Structure formats: structure tokens, C-alpha cells
Length: 121
Image (cartoon, rainbow, N blue to C red; front, side, top):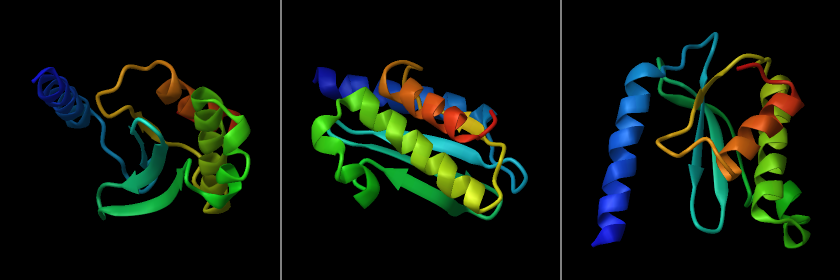
């Protein structure tokens, strides 16, 4: 029962954040999703409804090193990989969508990794 309430509360927070955060072609949205085991990040153009760039802890580049990494270190690597792929597609500035999660731990690590990789937000 508490799990359903927690999930519903996150969905309410996500909807509140999404009402204010919108990705354009010049400044797309960086969305983050976390599960218990993995973290996923993608850069989305909301006007066209397309994912421009994506990275996750399941990618080959990160999976090879993931056994020796903890969750926050893995999330930092995902952020850096996402930034590297975004810069290759000429994406330099994004808006950050935390998707109802607290800006803490793995979510914060993805944002810091993306900033270290060269993205501006």
C-alpha cells in the first residue's frame, strides 16, 4: 500500500515539474529515470517528440566497468557519456528534468556528470 502511495506521489511531482520544464530544439530536455538497479538519461526534443540522445547504466561502455562502481559513480559515468554523445550531435545546452525525484544521490550525480562532460544547464 505504501509503495503505491509513494509511486503516486512521485507521479504528482513529475507532472508538476513537467508543467514548467519543456524541451525545444535549441534547448532540449534532459530527463532522468532511476530504477532500483539502473539509471537512464535521455535528451528529448518535446516539440517533435523525439529522443535525440540516450545513455544508461546498461550501455556497453559503462557495463564493462560497472562491477567495480557504486550507484553514484555509475550515475556520474552515465552523465558523462550522455554529455559526450550530446556534444557529438551539437547539443550544448539543455534543461534538466528530475522527473519528480529529489535532486540528491544518483540524480544529482547524473547532472554533475553531464556538466563535467560539457553540457550547460
